[in-house]
Length: 87
Image (cartoon, rainbow, N blue to C red; front, side, top):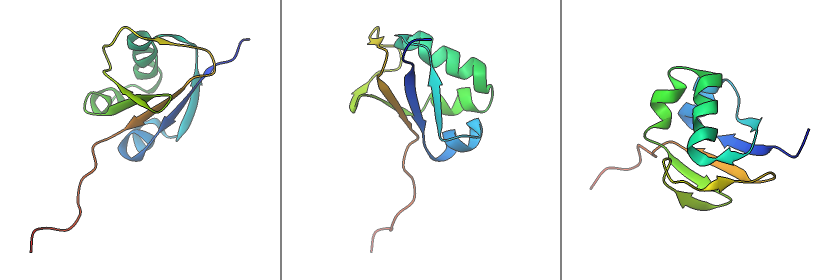
């Protein structure tokens, strides 16, 4: 087996997947994300639609035709909510 892609999931996605990290085969980004959705089902797939996707630290659009190479890291970040209100 070759070097896999490391996937880090945070907050609601980690909760939906039941894990904060996974490894998956490399490939085009939309295919990698589809494979994660297949692996973790709902509500992971729904939550992923509103997430920021970082590929090796750079933001990419989930439907962008970029290659996720062996050894790459994907970070899936749900929107941040909460914080202090206006005073």
